[in-house]
Image (cartoon, helix red, strand yellow):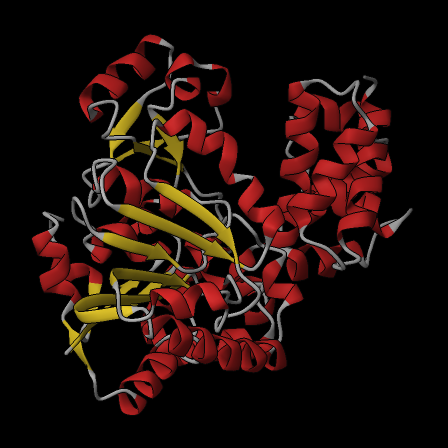
Length: 418
């Protein structure tokens, strides 16, 4: 494709994404369905340029106020991720001079807001939580996340998968904490490899793997993944249970559960029972009340721990939305807790970095439910043979940060029913 046409498409894609009325990944997917003739490199250039703008939106918008032409075109040129040769071919002398002028500006001389690229309310909350670690977090959020894989221990060994990936030209290294994890840089086409189609690996952030390890599911138990979604953690739980016992995957969205079916077929698991529920007090839950050994509640949340992957969320969330989520999280956790039998373990988790969705919800639950006693996440992770478990824990809860642990931002609290 001619460079001018490719930059025009980047401009069109940015115009759609910056409406911020739908998740960026959904907008990108829909855009590529409309332009099926694009090759892999062209898709990569367009998608990465769009995500670069979302990560540093305030910075690029500041400079885009100068220059000429459509604002979205200026943003595309400033954030271009498709190679210098294409950029030079698509721009004239005036645009090239403007770009050189912008690139000569020292970022350290700019106001804080243009350097952290966060809405004021979120920047304030993170500064309060992290202090001097705020800027290292900002730096980590400005870069794309690596690709983490979970080896399906029901079918394969980590070392064998690592060797097979290397034979395919993909360098993978063990994740530092999860014994099931491998980390890959870049975005290789895994779905074309036999190791993927065979069900030996699934894409899953190391943080998500640690939530499953924290749950501690064992052979022969009855376990519930309460907000299963597309089932990534369900599959990990089933493998940890060695395909024994009974594992329920509950979710209010039948559409999300449908995405579990092909993954479940690859996994080799036969102990998983997906079920759509209407709400946290559904009749299915009442029938299981007091019978379950382990419940994992990966609650609906702001997703602000996943900004490396979903940078649009910082512009699409708000304090009001977080307050509404907090009320929903409390209701879901209360409903899920009814499932546990005495001695059963409850894990509440989010992929948020905000205390409103994390510590505050956990504290509220503890105060309202004296029949549950809090457990140390350090001890639970150590039991699961997670190395350096104490470095992953704040207080008694799991607290993962991108800049500290190279995972998405996660929180998890653990209780046992008395």
